[in-house]
Amino acid sequence: MTSLEDMMRDRERAIASSTTVPTATTIGALGSVARRRRRTRSAIAAGAAVAAVGVIGGVGALALGARADVPAPAAPTSSASPSASASAVPGPTASASPSAEPSPDPDLPLAQIVPGYAPVPQLSAEAIPWGEVGPGWFVVTLHDDVDQQTLFADQTDPWDPAVLPAYEGSLSLVSPDGDWYAARTLDELGSGLPLAWDGANLWTGTTLYPGSEHGFYDIDLVSVETGAPAGSIDRVPWELAAPFAPGEALVYAWGGEGLANVVATAAPGGAGACSDLPRGFFAAGWEPRDMSYLYSPVDGGRIVCFGFADDSSRTRVWLVDVDDVARSELLAEFAHPATRYSFVGWIDDDTFLFARRPESGPGAEALFRYDLRDGSITEVDASIYADVHYRSTEGYFHRVSQRHIVASLVDGGWEVALYGLDGSPVATIEGVCPSDDRGLSSETRTSGDRLIVTCPTDGDVAMYDLGSGAPVGSWDVGAGRILQAFDHPDR
Image (tube, rainbow, N blue to C red; front, side):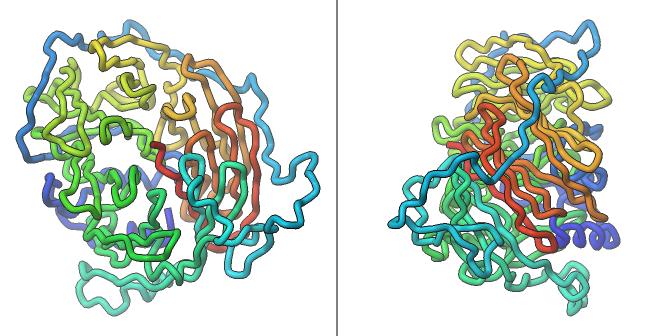
């Protein structure tokens, strides 16, 4: 969370007003549930127990394909087992220097410190292999902060928007091999706060509208390769976002009595998500900062939604077609309220994992595998996710690397445990990252077969191989500026 977002949280708490419930076509000021929870969590641990019960309203008529014979998962006969430990494999320590380096080719460009960019040896923008940029790549931005005292100083109405200033800083591309490229200065990309990267464009917030507990942004999209404008989107609720294609992102924000899940897009015609369903959407459970694990690229894009049935004590499970919500499918109806279920991750194009949560407390009391080919549901070991909690631990299954990723805050640092699909421990990696007085701490992102961890308080960036947990590199970009890492969408 940037200091601007932190300032917005404190300011909006003082403003305090009622909120409206988002629909498929209009999204009002979003509610305060998530931000109250976020006050007790750091940037690396963003998801879990939600006690509220409610429904986000939506519009539109869908062609339904319900299968009434899909069984509801049975209630467990015993409590969830303790969380599995991945400590059997010692956590590697990242190193930016390989043990043996070949002699450099005098004809190849050399990495060097580039003025205005992170103080890490980098290749020039002309050396970026744009045809290779894809999953496994990251964008790292380093920029100054805003003057919190003057940003809204000229407002007469506390609900008036604020135009964000031009930020001084830079954007670097980091390859799966750990090579840095000095891509663009923020001045070249125009004014605005860096918010996301969709694999082609940087998303920058240019105008900030106060909400009940978080802001809405007008967003400009700018091509990182050419610096040319790539579109704009007005008044996007910005709590958590996951770009999944150039100009398109799934956006998640709390409002009314549940989670609003919509698509923000610069493309004509738009797209849809969970909040476009007739009965809306409620998502309890974990909310990692990297929400891209919810999206499957098959058939133009799909996500799984847990919404309330007509009887709110039961749950309807939807397979939503992001490109055309009218083609969405009602998969099943479960025996418990929607507050009890959470999506955990796609295994492949035809199967996904979901959890049933206890009525109170963190984690999963049961974990299930759903097969879209025949509607079968199989219970699997849930111990990995027994301790997932927004205050300290987040976890999900990453389709590309076929790894369960469980990231935790520990005293003065972070720990990421990697497990195979069957729950067997692969590796545990860890590092130091003290929280500052705003609660900022480490953050993890996954892209392709790579994991990146940033520590904004110390200015540390580290990259790891998701297959083995082996270090790829670590870099010190210095403290005192806003450090963010954005992953390339997994497609």
